[in-house]
Length: 271
Image (cartoon, rainbow, N blue to C red; front, side, top):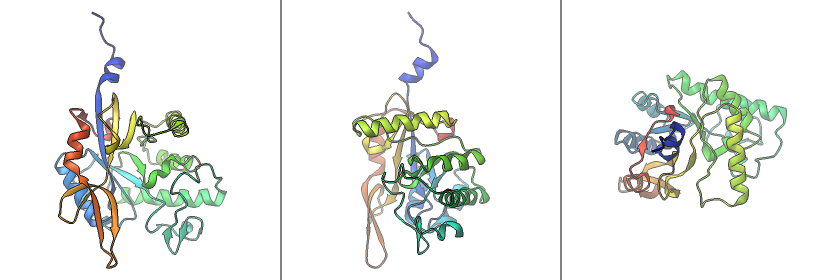
């Protein structure tokens, strides 16, 4: 009988990372993420640096060392640095604009000043976590801005300067994409590899996986509580006139059980 090589065995093994985005964004989702971590439903989380629940997130993160990455954010909330606050392309009235939402700016040139303002802001976001004692294990981003072709070199520079070499790849689960998106996902993975980063073999929202795939799959979730206090994977937020935010989504435990199967869970820093 032919003996399998290590590479062949790795390809046949299904391992999963379940990462919860938005740690620190709100009190509700921050508490939900911590509960999901304590319950073994997630393996890792990524923290924003400009959320409304940062003090709570920093306190809880002390119980999650080695499992907390940075969730870079240029699309929502308040900017940290005065330089970018004065750049109307990216910030209006102190809050981030929609400039980096979607793919419309993936190949739009950034001026030298734009690049410097973005570098300063992203560096400040990473430094804020480090200054609070967070050992950053990996990086991803709000609205997947790290996949923006023109922004990526700035993010890569910030990561290298802080010795962060694990990063989320572009969405690439079969059945989701047409030709152009599939080509871009492969091109972006090549760029990550060429730039010296480590990343999972697959990435998508947990709901897009019919089953774990061969290799290492990252499954993205957004834990929160619905109005009944149930721990859910948030899919939608309803903003009420009184300022309350109502989270809507599916039961998180059921989703994890359905889509993770019997795959081995690993943490991000094992990449």
